[in-house]
Length: 535
Ligand code: F6P
Image (tube, rainbow, N blue to C red):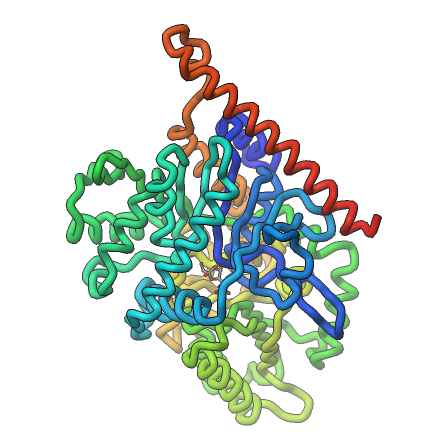
């Protein structure tokens, strides 16, 4: 049987034994902001929130995240809680407030100037700043307090996301040994030589070994992590079971390649996608020419300059293709407070301008760079219109744009040009696989996409679609939950056992509290729903 939202709901209901699900991720799934004096909400760019929102919609529970929108506080209760999705709430978002200094040191500093370059093989030098590290520790503690509040009063499973929270699992386990804690590391894990240059490597590893289950995108990432642990901490590594035992705590380390909900494509495209596509063609003067598209946050791991240099190379090598296609790059602004990201935006703008000047004319601009936040509905129209989608990450844990593109192509047309250095390349082997550092190979990959006969496009796309349909986000979450639920205490046998009658009231009490909490949560969401409906 395949994985669906319904099957995941069932797994969450049966395997969590009434334990509350608390997800922690730095980025919130919905941001409230002011536009023209009014409050609006948007969904942020980036794969993590897109992937996890459907999981929360299926399982229910609480998502703890940094409240980063300028109108976020306006719509929350005094605890920082708001029901989401804002137009039809069915789970709770608990926002954590950070000071500017904390955000600077923890998010821009330790997370995105130290761990991000440390974990990606893109030759960007990590910044090791003790002040950033202090802020990182402090913010992990702040999140631990918020999670403990949300998990109070009964059994709970906490599912921690990503490199922003390496210390959180240990903090949670120390405070509440009964909590079941799992973490998924969405980005790659480097080899041990690279990782162990970090002055706080041991603390990071120890924090992560507070987890019952630690998931990575690939087996290679798991092996690198185990090697880093082996070379720096006292512990026992069981390579048969992929587990680490340290101070009496057992952490299972396994790969769980993340994915998307393929069914969302039709929702985003709707019945009017062709009309919206025509508007896009008109707005950017694209005529009826084939499009190659790129959709990314503007991040130096994504290989955007490499891709534009390949467009330039292509036009030099194949002048017959001048005027025959457009390259449309959506580049969502990201982490602009960090100089490397600002410089990258300038570099991409400069390259687009230079290519258009060199090869274009008044009637044809080869590169269209859209440096703005695009909603999912618009992005899916672009995917559907495209002759090809180019994903040229220099290194990427998974890259969900690749899987989204495939999910958008119900017509079985379109070519995926995909970097070999993404997690997605291990599953989507029918893509045109390229080395993004090789400008000629990337340029020829684009030419292949523009020339591929429809029958071959269809053969490849059908195979890729069946992989994304089967290995969908519900399977990812279902397998993770099934694995970690082995650690969730099963109340039934204990309650049935006469010899453990002393524990029974505790379990009954826990179950009763869980039920009461669920009712309170449902009441809260109903109130939020009525509020959002303007009742
Ligand atoms: O895992 C990568 C990640 O940090 C995810 O949170 C998300 O997919 C993306 O990068 C977005 O980054 P940010 O939350 O810093 O905007």
